Picture 1: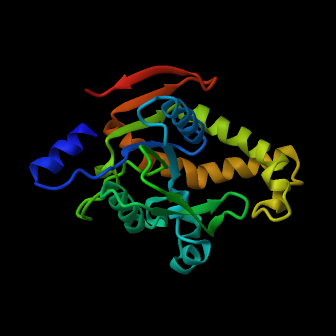
Picture 2: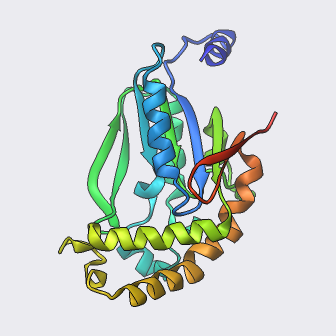
Length: 241
């Protein structure tokens, strides 16, 4: 914050109240959302910045109808399935100190972007959590990661992440999938063996390739890597100086 204020004064402008932006990346099922919520709660306890907002990039996925139109419905979560320009625009508005910034929302029940927004009103800190927030697309102008003051990557062995993904699939069958409005309601009554087979197929065709091709290569770009063990505990913290 002091750096932003000094820069504004040097350039002859009035210092704008801009949030401290934290980017958090990692695989599906690695525990990004939980880690981000814990970080949000801890930062909110600090006296100097009690207003801490959490933004997930799921809201910047193209709607399902648009993914179908583009022929990439099976690549949901891959970089091309996101409206990156809209995400960059949102971060630029935060950086500029705009009084209100709208963030689109996503429903994990309907598995689609919904007609609601999250309003950010000059928070002190914003945590932006998503699969691809640290990726760098050559020759495409300003990157999402350019806006972050601090970055984290939640890491684990691939075999553990796949197991957690299957376990989460089983949990969702008894919770979200049981909702008649859920996009995945048709899977709620699947026997265990068939459900685990479905989870393995989705992991092998979508989540594993995305992790290897797009997400894991961004690990070295993070300032801090939280390395988790098989029990979800963070066993090492790597700091890039």
